[in-house]
Length: 344
Image 1 (cartoon, rainbow, N blue to C red):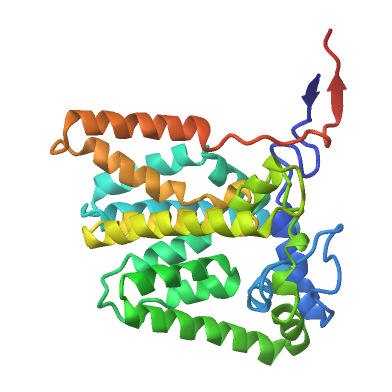
Image 2: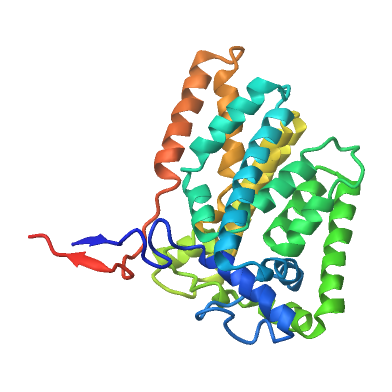
């Protein structure tokens, strides 16, 4: 059976989607109108799953039309991706000269075709902005003032970045850890001050309702819990199995991050933490894996380092190619297809 979807099909065509951006806009609009944010869908059956603080930030987008928001959001996403790549080169020790800007622009163009980046743009997701916040903030010198504020804001928008607190803890970056936690607490407080009822509902119940995002065994759930649910063919996988394998992933991921940090590989440590957070999150969509961007930059830097052995450079090169071929492929169901052709 061959399925085909016209390019202009709403939500499923290549050029027609931005569903999540529209949900952000409507979430902001609900706040502006003073309506309950978490009692039901905000757009076509879609629930608002972000924090009250995020909803307050999204009120800015409620004043734009959908088409205006698409243009602005897409432009800012591409600029943020460019900034992430540029910062990665900076943290790897490169001077930000004309060559660095040119290489970063080329890499930005290429990385647009990465599945996490392509899907982030396609859906109008927020992942690249959160990636930029973390890379900018925690990639700075450990003596930088207010280092940790970006990690706190990112966690205040979407809880997954709070996993970086564990990285700060095991690497004993106490000041950044305290700054991140205090900043996060401030975002929670802002939510309670401005939209108390919504904040109370979110932090006392909505927060742990993973079904608002999607069924655990959905093919789109690319986390440990999603993998176990799919392998065991149940939307309620064994909590013991999920906890055991999640704990194993945390130990391996944070262990690698700690080793990288000890050897001065700051960017690699952050990247391993970001990938680990996505692995153990209750629900991880494909577009959550934007941490493959800094990973690719680290790998490219390794390959281009003439001081490395030829064999190690070849191995890393093969891993990069293999990663692009395998890491971004995931099965799904095409029940939304508009046309169906039966081939005999």
